[in-house]
Amino acid sequence: MELKGPLCYVLDFDDIYNYAYQTAIKVKRSEWRPDAIVGIARGGWVHARIQCDLLGVKDLFSVKIDHWGVTATKDGKAKLTCPLTGDVVGKRVLVIDDITDTGESLTMAVDHVKSCGPADVKSAALMHIAGSKFTPDYYGVEVAWAWEIWPWNFYEDLTSLITKIFQGEKVKEMSTMELKKHLREYNNIVLSDDQLSKIKAHMGFLGTIEYPLDKAWRLKE
Ligand code: ADE
Image (cartoon, rainbow, N blue to C red):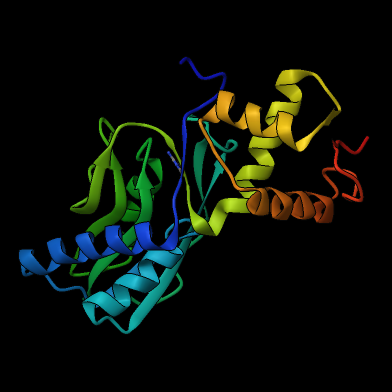
């Protein structure tokens, strides 16, 4: 069935840990050992921290790259908004992100880290999108394009996707039943009642919808 929006997959922390583990196995087999890890904020941070453990690395630094874009779009121009936070001079550095999509984040982060005087720079991602302009040295799995909903971005992504469903349907109010049906039709997402009620409370907290005192999801004017 043709979806009305982008195909999405909801991932949990077990999925993430498995992909991270696969990535670490590939680093170890290559016999290349990083002295420092750089996590690309925000998407690469959890993965970067896990690799510190799996690869025995104590130095964890950050760079921040922002995108002009929204959830589940392929576009968005990358911009380095916070430069490297630590000293990598003479070190072997592994630059880490969650996924390669357009490849812009990793390209920009790797170029920036290379300009900071390291001995060597390699890159890693949990997932690599086939056809991305950037192929990391190490990754857990290769996948076709989809929007991956990470456990650390669940509420942010669902808020954005649900807001788009309201816009697409041109309505101000929806029942939980209707929303469930639309999440399926738009994004192939199936959520439990418990997950939906937590998202609803979160959107109420953000002020995106009326604070959920009744059954309906009602957009705030
Ligand atoms: N960030 C950039 N591309 C992404 C994708 N396909 N899924 C989740 N997060 C992303």
